[in-house]
Amino acid sequence: MRFAPIALAAALLIGAGTAQAQDYPTRPVTMVVPFAAGGPTDTVARLVAQSMSKTLGQQVIVENVGGAGGTIGAARVAKADPDGYTLLLHHIGQATAATLYRKLPYDPKADFAPVGLVTDVPMTIVAKKDFPAKDLKELVAYVKANPDKVTLANAGVGAASHLCGMLFMQALGTSLTTVPYKGTGPAMNDLVSGQVDLMCDQTTNTTGQIKGGAVKAYAVTTPTRVPSLADLPTTKEAGLPTVQVAVWHGIYAPKGTPDAVTKKLSDALKVALKDDMVKQRFNELGTEPVAEDRATPKALGDYVVAEIDRWKPIITAAGVYAD
Ligand code: MLT
Image 1 (cartoon, rainbow, N blue to C red):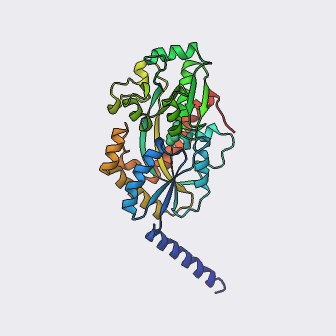
Image 2: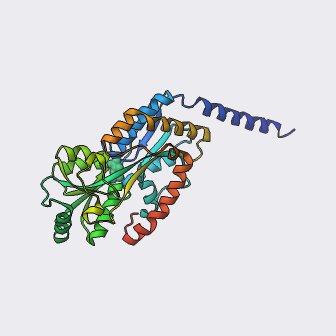
Image 3: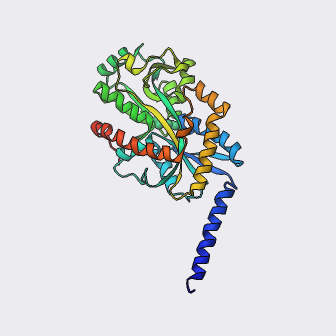
């Protein structure tokens, strides 16, 4: 009897939590993008957020929290209230940061409640438009002969551009001066204006610039060509078979978010991935939505674990770390 009030209070709290999850969302949801506005992650997030807003009946507002290769924004979400009102849309960096950072202020496996995978984006090796190399073979020869002269832009340690740049330098056995940005949106501006020489970046950020002739493109980093950039050879075709990476994106809530909430978000994500507006824009930008069975909490949770294991030996062999 003495414990009855406590039991009652607990039952009421559980009941309130269930009711909250059923009503969710009753106010706008923030989707943190851990890179600058106008870049590839931002592009994917804004398309998906627009569609999810319709399904959820509340605005999903994208907030850009760039810096430190995506780890500042991810840390913000890891520490947010687990109520479903703060989400993270991050990419492969969620897995690679686990090895790249000696002191990561969060645990990518333990501190998040996965919602689902979104897309796998090919990357492209691009240069400022007057860069003196007409194809990948010439680019490799030029970089090897002039490593001190060539600058390579990226979005910080943990960014996809950093990872791809690392594979590129590893393949050439050379080291270039890297120029870090808060995202490849601003990095692309400097590439177009010729302030940096090279970048490896996602098609969601490069396709328009390649087609408009604002940058020179050498190869795509996927095993097969990308239909929207069909003239561009793969790195394998062009002679750099080890520079292979596709940038998977996923949505996360903080650990402790009720399952009913992550399920609702995953269901809204599945609708977004079938939305014609999303499919068409993804297609124009050289990517496509993942299959429905990957847009689930379990699929993303398993994938993060598998990707941490897959990249660990590659990053360790490259010997690249950040504090
Ligand atoms: C961005 O949105 O700026 C990126 O995804 C950067 C990157 O990871 O290279």
